[in-house]
Image (cartoon, rainbow, N blue to C red; front, side, top):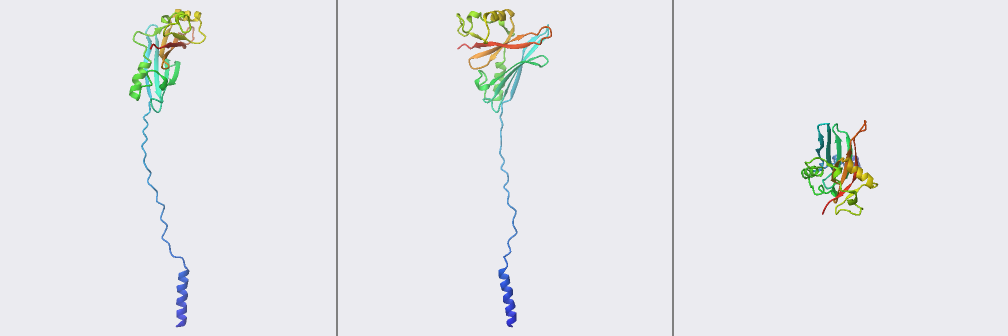
Length: 206
């Protein structure tokens, strides 16, 4: 009897020393991903207009204007003049926020309209350098006009008079808030391709 009691006591003591069984570990709970909505309004707009469309001899040039940016206010405006086969002969770029006529366009639809106005050269055909003011009326000269043309640096009277005499086609567009940038087309001769060069700025009235 004592022996049985001793064995029973030993079994109970041994059981007491064993670690208690633990519940099987549950896999860590993963949180469902939170969906986020990202709306990229953007302001990516491109327009184009014929600049010179001449049948005989065939001379066709197109003005192409684009704005690229996360918003219209943060956009960059790019102007490209292309020959009829698409080759660019003039490029210009500037920040929309500093360009007259573009900075107030708040969305792509408004920017499209603004870009068409920005490169519009009127219905009478390209302006020509023969209509430029006399040298004496340009910026820095004795008879400076109220809203003078500012010839590009390095231009002298002889070069200006020749420019007027050549009567070259001229493309002007707002390049800031107070002036337009003007570039002229010099037709190619004897295998030399046509090229465009800037001649200066025309100050806005007002």
